[in-house]
Image 1 (spheres, rainbow, N blue to C red):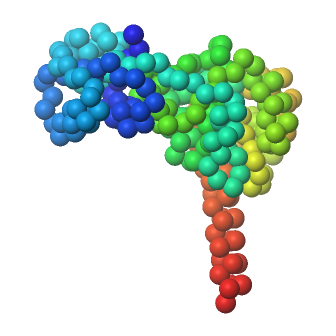
Image 2 (image 1 turned 90 degrees about the vertical axis):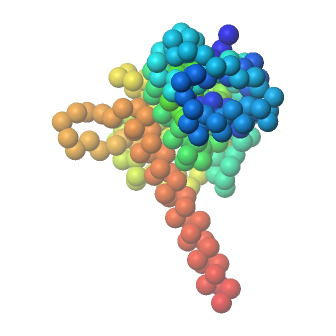
Image 3 (image 1 turned 45 degrees about the vertical axis):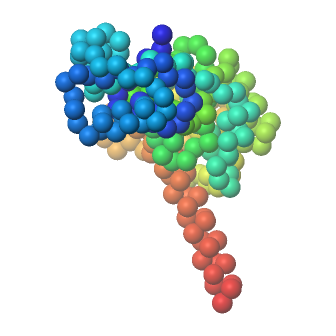
Length: 256
């Protein structure tokens, strides 16, 4: 069986309708408005609800961080690379590529930020990386249910495929000579983030069109991958919004 847990994670999974739900288990002791709303959502969708003890929910979730809600569902349906590229949301492509992020909480945090920043989708490797589990779904606050997530066999080869499709690849590396905010992201691009502690693999770094770094002004040499990713993702958002604003203002001025 596949379990997802946490109020936001289960709520968003119900809304997204990307999974088949067998049933949703809720804590007998909870009677607050958020669970009442979820019960109503389940009834509207024809999803059975069972009231269980916290011990039973702990056992299903594998931990006590379920907030009184655990759902039995089908597994996350992964996309392929074409789906991610085809999910282009704006003027320019915005793809996140993860080179072996192994911690499920980090993966969930990256997915949450990627969705918030308007990324088209995320690419993860099949091996030596965290898959989209219940822990990831909860850490992403349900964002994993909306983003196309592609599993690929080889990240370096995937970068080559992206480049063949005229998508520039930007690797985040602490030894990158160019600072992250000095690059113009108003182009079809993919942001490549490395694994915790290890960073980008050497071959992946060589394949990237650009390598950028975040200036570290303190004593530690690097940021957590999810935090570093968020910094660069929102620089991409800032630049693209600034361009759109400038174009709108110029068009308005020209109209006058």
